[in-house]
Length: 154
Image 1 (cartoon, rainbow, N blue to C red):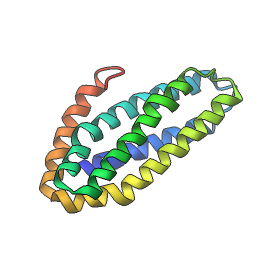
Image 2: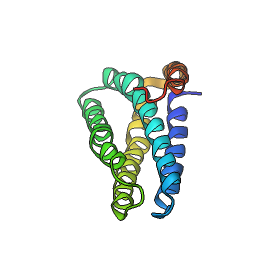
Image 3: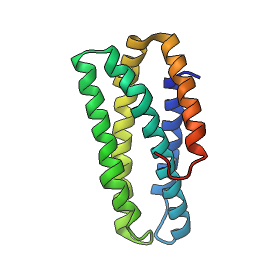
Image 4: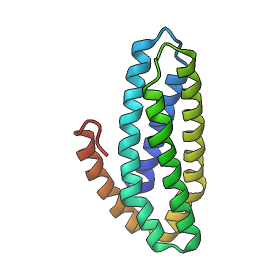
C-alpha cells in the first residue's frame, strides 16, 4: 500500500469515528469517552506518520509552494493536537459544551482532510512518484505497527 492510500484509509476511519461521536447524546457518557479516546489515538498515529514521513518528503522534493503547504498542514495538526483535543478531553462528556467542541473539532479535521486530499496528496503524487510513495507507505506501515502497540504514542 502506498503512502497516500494508507493515509486516505486513516482519513476514512477518523471521519467515521467523528461522525459516530457527533451523533451521540449527553446520555452516551461511556460511548463518548471511548470514541474520543479512539479518535485521539488514531490522530496521534496518523499525525506522526504524516509529519515524520510524508510531509518532509514533499517539502524536500518541492519548492516554496510545497514548503508553505508543509507548514500550514503542520499548523492545522498543532491546532487540533495542542488546543482543541486537550480542551475536549477535559470537558465532561455529558454536557452540551462537549457536543459543541466535538462539532468544532470535526469541522477542523474535515477541512484539513479535504485540503490534504485535494491539494497535498496530488502534489505528493506528482513530486514523489509511484516508487517513492510505495517506499514511504512501507515505512508508514512499519511505524504504524509500532505505534499501534504503544498506547498514547507520538
